[in-house]
Length: 274
Image (cartoon, rainbow, N blue to C red; front, side):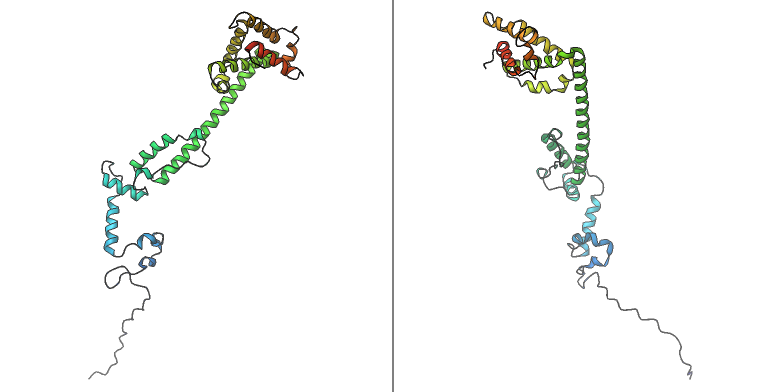
C-alpha cells in the first residue's frame, strides 16, 4: 500500500460576486440591469421601459429597419422616421419658432408655414430646422444692414450732388419740393412721406430736380383763373422775388416772421385756410 501524501493543489474557488444578475429567474430583466454598464447611463430612461430581452431585441430590429432615409411615398416608414427624429404625430403640430430679435421685415409667417410643412414631409429634425432658421435669419439680417448702409450712402451722395448744383438755394428748393409733394399727396390721397423716404427715389437727384420743376410749373400755371391767378403770382413773388416784403422771412428759417411768411405762401399758393 502506497502511503505517499498527495501534494496536488486543488483548483481555487471562484470569488463570490455581489453583482446583481442581468435577468431574473423568469427571464425578465432584473431591475436596474443597465446600471452595471457605464456607457448605458445616458439611455437609462429608455432602457428602463424594456421588461424583457426579446422586447429590447425587437425594438433594435425596428431601429435597424429605419437606418437610411426612407422613401417619402412609404407613409408608414416615414411616420416611424419622423417619430424617431423627434417630430410630432401631425404636421399641424410642427411649427418653426421665430428666432429671438428677428425683425418683422425678415420674418414672413406665410413662407415659414410653407417651409415647416416641407420640413415635416421630409422628416427634417426640429433641431436641424431651428439651426437653419437661425443661420438664415442671421444672414438676412446682415444683408438687410448692408442694404440700409448702401442706401444711406446713396442718399448722402444724391444730397451732396444737389447741394453742389443748387448752392445756397438747396434748402429753399428742398422746402419747395416738400410743400409740392404734400399738396399733391393731399389731392391724390397718397402718403407722400413714404415716397419722400423711399431710398430708390431719395438716392436719385433727378427725382428732386423733376419735383422742383413740377413745383415751379404749378406756381406759374394756376389751376383756376381770376383771383387765384393773382394769388399764385403773389406766392411766386414771395418765394423768388427778393424785393417782396416777405421774401427774406420766407427764405430764412431763423427770421422772426418765417412762420408767418410760410403761412402766407401756403395760403396763396395752395389755397390753405389759416
